[in-house]
Image (tube, rainbow, N blue to C red; front, side):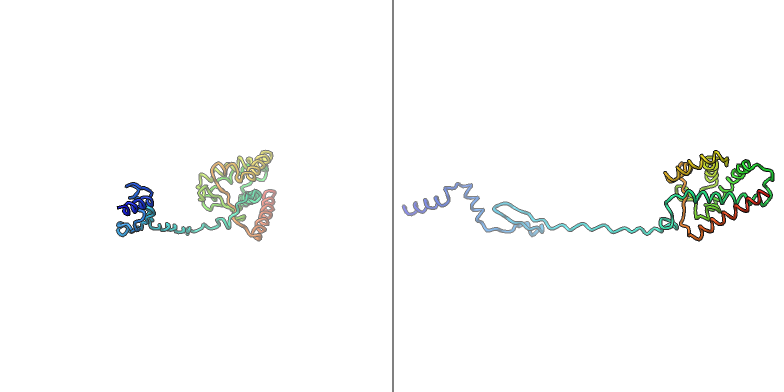
Length: 244
């Protein structure tokens, strides 16, 4: 009896006089670790660390990268690589000058210019008569002979040719607000104002209001020289016709 009591007391000392709840916890701690019964059914692995469950979820696969989209739409001709984004006020001036002199030489060749006509009045009439001709050319070809020599075209905001009414309205604005009806004193102020507007904002007032674009395609040096020579020749011919 005394030996059994001694052993019990010794066991009690070793266990630290633990109660029922503590003894249960100790028993759980020293129980061999076993895999969870649901691990096989759920495909998940469970670990037990001192009574706490830690669940290892299966690794998530990275989301597939979206396919790279390539723009295969065709590029318009003379777009970006062949089109000048800079403004060329003098090129536009010479193109219009060539148009006016060609038109003057044409009507002079048919004897439609009176010999005793006043030069200022003649300029006003010729420039006004050029408005419908220019509108017809721009609405059909998108350019004029002078603009064609300098590889210049006129387009609307969507890149399309202007219809006749829009082209006529634009030519009328150029006649009034650009060249001042052809009257020298007024022309000086209107052309300076148009030049400043074009160089500072990239468009004249009449084109900016409607969203029209004057596009200068690249021109070779040879064609530029030829265009200038044609202007000189046409001017000489026109002056000869009007003075005779």
